[in-house]
Amino acid sequence: MSEESNAEEDRSVEPERPPTPRVITADEFAAVDIEAPIRELSVGHAHPLADAYWTAHKQAEAANANSPSGLVYGLLFEICRIMLKVTDRGDPWQAFGSSGNWRTAIPSDFKGEQAEVIAGIVPDIVNPVLQARLADIVWSLNRKRAGLRRRQSPATSTPSRDCSPAI
Image: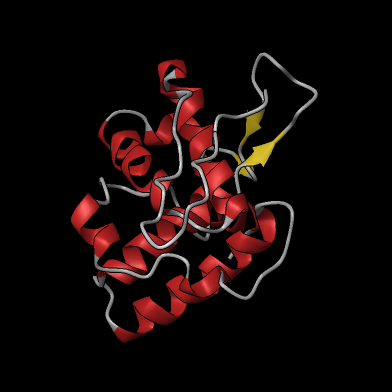
């Protein structure tokens, strides 16, 4: 095989995880403990969450390729690995990787119905890093959604906290 043929093969190789091809529904999110893979993590940024979601996604896929947990964890993996460049106020989000004709996810990949589903789960998320990441993505896509708040638990008297991004 010639070097030219090898180069053509390399260009056709898909990324390890392309952006989610369809909307992951509210019912699919509800069927999954979305914080299980990150419950024991104590970190201040989203990239370690991406690693945990990737592992959970691969395990769920191995057990059942079309399981809600595999789909949800795959989506959360994609969202958590989006790069945030805080020094760029105009366009702070970047793909984690790109080459040739492919790239990893960016917020606009989740606009529309997927963003609305994500906005619906934000108030129930306990992990502050995941909650902030999802709220930031939703806000980036629709600045009118800046008021996403955590729902007050009936078991506590702690007030809701504002989850709007500080960009």
